[in-house]
Image (cartoon, rainbow, N blue to C red; front, top):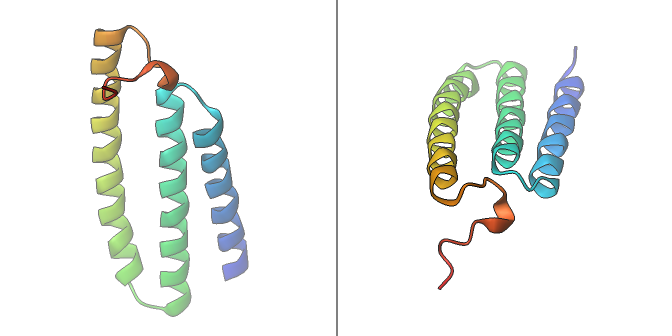
Length: 99
């Protein structure tokens, strides 16, 4: 497969994630959309790294995956805490920072 196939796959995954972020009201659905968008970036990094022929993009992808996992864990912890306080995970009802 050529580079165009990987870039097309990454663009489709990114668009699905963007649609998920823009259309969901559930906070967990929004987090899943962000995860899809970050995975599309990882696909691009690996595809360009393989196309160029060096390993730098793949190493950077491993670090990005580690950061993505920690972001997901922290995001889910925040969602659980908000559910305990507000009894909802709908993003429209979360106005804790409004004065």
